[in-house]
Length: 107
Image (tube, rainbow, N blue to C red):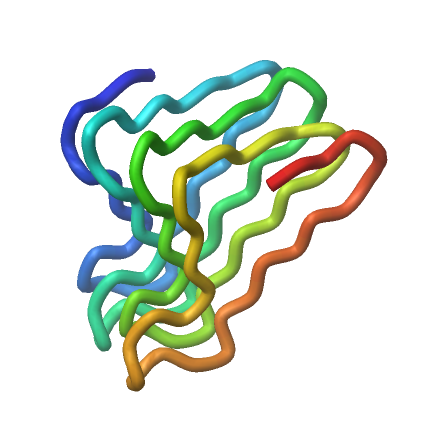
């Protein structure tokens, strides 16, 4: 999938999930991506797993812009690429986590 708009996993809602697997690819062009954007967005999850799976952001990727307890997991050889990455951006964000695990996994 390719989009020119900002991509949200939980813009102002909680407990949303994005899974990219089996060589799946998401390209966010000319915009940023957010996992947990507003203070109301918490417990959102993105999982990018398995070799060949890729999430590319030409701009920034923010895990917990102002939300809490949002997670990004990159595993089993998957890749996430972006120009700038943030884990917890605004003062209201807390307990946001990024985990990179498994051989060949990259952020």
